[in-house]
Image (cartoon, rainbow, N blue to C red):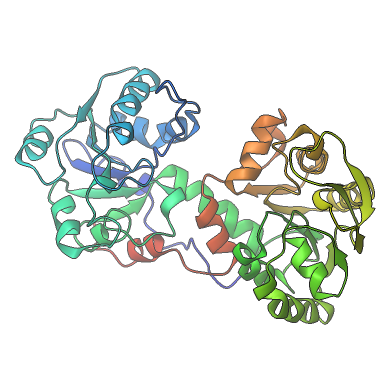
Length: 406
């Protein structure tokens, strides 16, 4: 892949050991956690994943100021406040976490930051309450920077965003990546730059429009490429096959045909699922299996079929390097979960290097109780992971690599 995202000169947090006591360290974390209808946090994984960086900073006796977003609020919103996150984080850290409900550019926020003691943690209010965040406003970036003396970026889930708290702030402070982001980048570098063969990529999802750049970038860079999920039907339609009522993006038929032509002359062996589990709709009680080249009208493909599962499992078993991004069917329904579950289990059994990315793929691992210890790395960033797979640079990482030195 063309985008090398971690180099020997990328500033990393461990290089700051022994230099942080009493320093105000701003940390961009990703606490964009899901909530239940009763207001409790449904999954605390993103909070837990921040702990290595935060515990290191506590041990270093830094004064730790956390910046995060939650959802996509249109201005301040009660349901997007970060107080429940602060309470959950305190439990995991085993110490109090202060929470600042005031606007980030307020005198109250500055006073709370200045009053902090060494080793203490303060969580600021949702950064996206301020519209200047998402447009990377330079004045707002400076406001953020004034709250700290150093900056740690540890929010891989937004590494592909050029926002004030992910990229703009680095122009004003010595900056580095935290342990979570460093781990993400090291695995992606390994799997994309120095992989063992056979190299296998499994790409699924609903819309080919969201993955076309990834598919194009993988040609010639992996030995085998599997395409599943509803996105495959646009490719099948481009070949003139009957896809019934399956999801298709007609405006991308010509682009899909061009991709298939490029695939035919590349060194990558392409496999598009050969059969599909079909039904009139997602809520159907029964399903039938048809070849993906001849789906009947009134039916839509909602999962890959048994022949496809068996074929892909053989590739997975023999692979030395695996990238999996996107489900292979509508796995939320038990009737259409076999493909995603079976391939996920096969990836976990593989003894090579495997990286799983994308929110739906990660959710499937949880839903089907797939042993995560069998997977080398489960990425925390869906969009960021896709950007790297497309060969695109990550704005936050590029900014850190050119930031002021500590």
